[in-house]
Image (cartoon, rainbow, N blue to C red; front, side):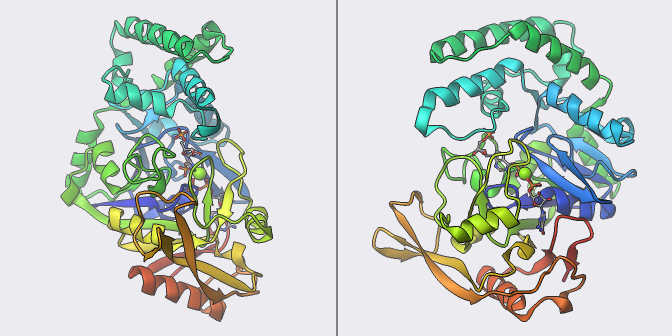
Length: 423
Ligand code: GDP
Ligand code: IMO
Ligand code: MG
C-alpha cells in the first residue's frame, strides 16, 4: 500500500501534531522521517495538552505503531523525558514505539556546538532551537556520526569519546564563552542511553517494506516546514534536514513510486520563529492580535512567533516542491473579527511582478502584493460542519483553492482533536 505523507508548508508549527493525531485511527503506522527535538508537536484532547518532540504523534492511539525513522536525530536525554511524560499518562509506549538503528544520536557536545556556533554568529544567528540539530546532521553527512545501532556494539564508547574530544576542540576554536560541565552532561546522557536501550531497535527500512507488502496503512509525519528545508527553504535560515516530501523517501527508505497522498498543512495566516526573511510579516496591531489570539509561542523554546498574512507565493512553491494532493487549513478561528484579510498573491521583485519564489526574499528585494478579502465576525470554535462556516470564510477558502488548484479537505477551528471540520 502507498505511504501517505503529512507535511508543513510554511515555517513549521502549522498544526501537524494535531492533524496526525486526528488521522491516526486510519493508519497502522505513524513514522517520523527527519528532524528531532527541534520539533514541538501539540495535541489536545480530553481537555489536556500534550507536546511531543521526537516521538510520533500517533503515540496516544493504542493500536498504532510509532516509528522513529533513520532520518531523525535523537537526543536520548530529551527522549527519556518524553517517555517519562508518556508513562505518567499511562501510555504503554514499549509496545508501540520502534526506533530505527540508523537514526543518529545527538550528543551533549552537539548541543554545545550549536550554542557556540550561534553565539559566534552574533546578529547573523539562525535562531536555532539549540537542540544540536545542525552539528548532528553535519556529523552524519561528514560520516562521523554515532547511530542508534552503534550503542548495541561493544566499542561504541571509544567512538563516543573520540568524537566528544573532537567537539571540545571545536568548541574551543569558536572562542566564545560557553560554560559547561561535560562530566555532568555525560552522566545524564549515558543514563538516558540505558533507557533508550529498553525500546525496540529495528532495521526500519525493512520493517516499512514488509508493512507495505502486508497492506498496512502508513502515514509519514513531517517536522518543521517546507520553508525550513535545507535545500528549498530560506537558506541559511533553515533547519539541517529535508523537510519536504523527498525527505520521507530518504528518512524512511520509502521508494518514490510508493508515495500516495501528500497532505499539505498550513495556517490561515503565517508564522515564523527564529531569524530569516518573512515577506508578509506584520509589525503592527494586526500581527500582535494574531499572536495573542493564536497563542503563537514556540512549543519547544517558548519564543514568540512572528506573525503575518498568508503568503500564496510561498505556499504555491511549497505545494509544487512537495506534490501536495490535499490541503488542510489550520487556525481559521484566529482570524475571526478582522474586518478584512490580506493574502499575498505576488511579489514586487527588482521592479518586476513575480508569482514564483525568487532566490532571495529579503525585505529589501521583495514587496508583497496583496489581494484583500472580507473578514468574518463569527466565532468558529464551536462549529462542527462545513455548512456552519460563515460566508466570508467560504469565500476565503474558495479563493485559496482557486489560486492553489488543490482542494482544502480539512478546516481546523481550534486546537482540540474535535475542532476539526472535514470537507
Ligand atoms: P506543529 O509543530 O505543526 O505540530 O504545531 P505546533 O504544535 O508547534 O503549533 C500549533 C499550535 O496551534 C498548537 O498550540 C496547537 O494546539 C494549536 N492549534 C492547532 N490547530 C489549531 C486551530 O485550528 N486553531 C487554534 N486556535 N489553535 C490550533
Ligand atoms: P515543528 O516540527 C518552527 C526553526 C528554528 C530556527 C531554524 C533552525 O514544531 O514545526 P534548528 O533548531 O533546526 O537548528 O533551527 O528552524 N525551527 C522550527 N520552527 N517549528 C519547528 O518544528 C522548528 N524546528 C526548527 O526556530 O529558525
Ligand atoms: Mg511546532
